[in-house]
Length: 425
Image (cartoon, rainbow, N blue to C red; front, side, top):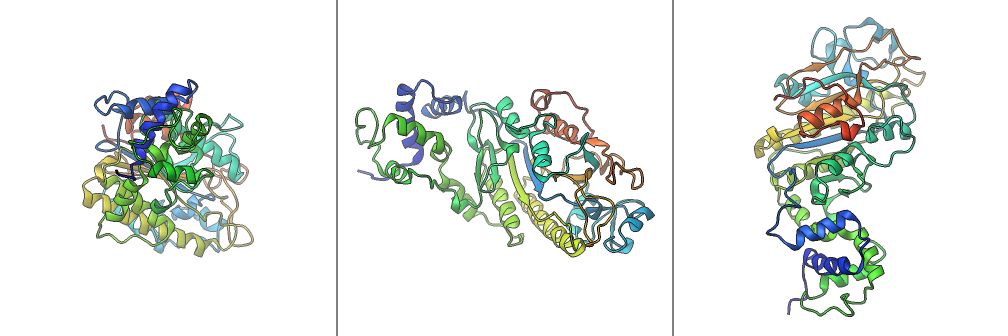
């Protein structure tokens, strides 16, 4: 008798019992059990999928990225007057036009731009900007500036509206904590730092081990297998449904077997991008991936610190897009960067910059129409020392939701925001 059965089979065995004994089971578990219990009936699982469809990768630049050091307005004397010690000399800038250029470290991104695979969206922000890291990040991730407490994220609401009851692999975040942006009311995606850490380590880990070592033919005791009671089983499935439905061994196998000739940086950021590329190559149904690069709170000695981050960003994204191109998947993927705010125009006394407001963001992919969107904010007509926004970030979200993920944006964002001619029809 085989003493080792998959988590999926155990989930079916236990989950169907749970359905019989707990009528208040959460909707996502209810739909998951029903869908998985009949593999011939795809009605509940045949939702939009990233296995052979469009994929979005969201890259969070944490800490408040200095947009003026990423997209440099080298053609404006006001830039050099405001930042005499930390401005980038014009001869080091990778020029886009006669006014702006990319940071000299972003060579891979300049290549993408030259190939028509990178769009710079200028002056992105929102009305009455907040300069607190936590509050502004909540605003960007929730997509709801007027809500005091974020209870869900814009991507999470996309999952809720576009694919309720679908496989939790519909969204994957690289990180130990699921970001607010990915949290929905009905769909809760996966989150892990590294594939090898994607294991259940909760307080019932011994019961979890028993479940994985129980024969599928072992008769349940009092309707519940092993020593797990209905109440503990409900609690257990609340916390382990995703582990039970999606074997972590699958993701680990995909990432360990992925072979690529591209050289990723060895940082957490590089490993995260390589993991995402491996999961895309492996054909997971994931539609949205989320990854972060931190360290952008550059209050002091910004020039070397920010340049190092730009180097890491360029190397990581260069490897990622080369990997996708080798797979033949680069035409299915779009990436969007964002940060919670930009930095102030004027440098501070510590040769750094303080919390600001509007900043540029990047959109990457093969299906883009424009190289530059929006006008660069004025460096002299400021809002309390900060750049005035010209593009509402929710318009960027609406554009991606409608024109890339092909879903109505109003139910997700709460209003119909203008869209930009970013994505090829």
